[in-house]
Length: 181
Image (tube, rainbow, N blue to C red; front, side, top):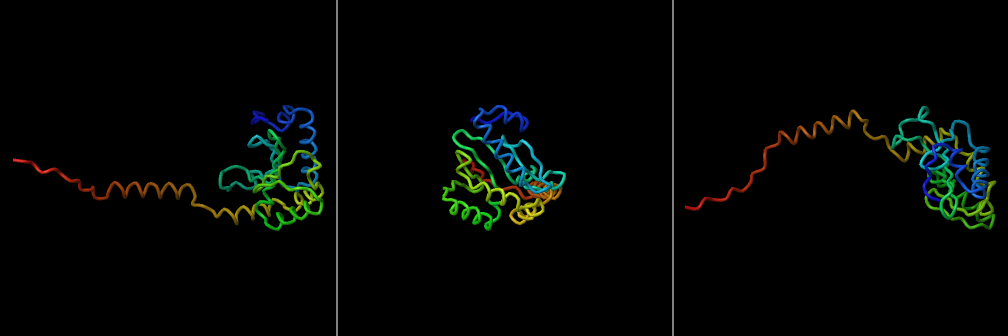
């Protein structure tokens, strides 16, 4: 599927073919059933996102809401992005063990768990993982992996100081060709 131009979750789901919409609706129901209180559902980055609202936590490294779980129907597969699993090695290990116990093959990048059908996933284990990380924990994981950078006013002051230093520095000497008699 090409990148979606939808503006809402409902628009996104409605533009999917029936069979793909059904899988996405079932995954959405799974996430919503297990999602801890404090996250919001939104449509960002051409995906259904479950995120910490900016009103709750605005100091993210990119100024965007802090994503926790996202769902997408890609061209050749579906994807569930598990940022909690990406940020927490214990959760990653628990997910790997759940796949091993179920006899299913795990196809995962850093946070993107790819699947072609719901039968490819240990759904009960996914539900437990989703339920295990309240927003406060996700915020703490984010802060531990993204140390706070200088504030915008401090950055601007540092740039201004650097520019002023360049202007007052002695000009470089350039070689002047000798005149010939």
